[in-house]
Image 1 (cartoon, rainbow, N blue to C red):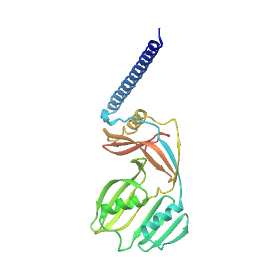
Image 2 (cartoon, one colour):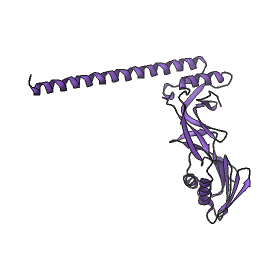
Image 3 (cartoon, helix red, strand yellow):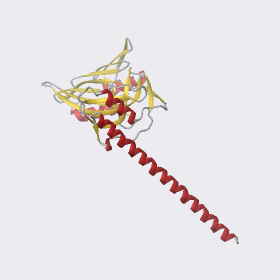
Image 4 (spheres, helix red, strand yellow):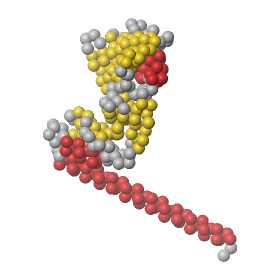
Length: 262
């Protein structure tokens, strides 16, 4: 057999081997999809037995999440306060981890877990545009929650997010408007340094929803509308991965490390 035929035969064998590998991968993926589908169907049946309905599409895929530990960054707080209140700016540590900031555009206070700014009369106007710009200026991302209207002022409420939009339960920012002017805003402070680490053992969606269903047996709840991964801010220092479940009786979270339901 000449070299050309040997080369052709080897290439043919390689092509056959590649096709076999691709077929095996395809079979494995089909098997995985089938197992996931069966698990979701069994979960739906189990929740139905508890009197709780959930749509097949509402059950998400899942992966392990990073756990974050927060540490305070006074230098970052100074930058944010200066950007909001203007320069020259005075700063004072008044004790108990509380800092007071005073600038041309108002006054602010920051502490370990929260912040608050009171703006001067010449402050910002145009509610939504200003809130979004201020969030960017502070280096924060958030989801708009609600507008609360009172006779003399309007309150815009947000929940903070991290990692491309994952909600942080236990956090919020509120913007207070009088007429067209933003007079004050404050909420949870996430300007510190985040150090992440991974934990291999994390609660899967099936275990979490069954546990939540059992916990809610004595509540008037009959439907899980949405399930997503998110975080819960614990003691202002740790962002713990959770399953966030929207129900017809409110929003609940299931801690993926401890199983605690909040």
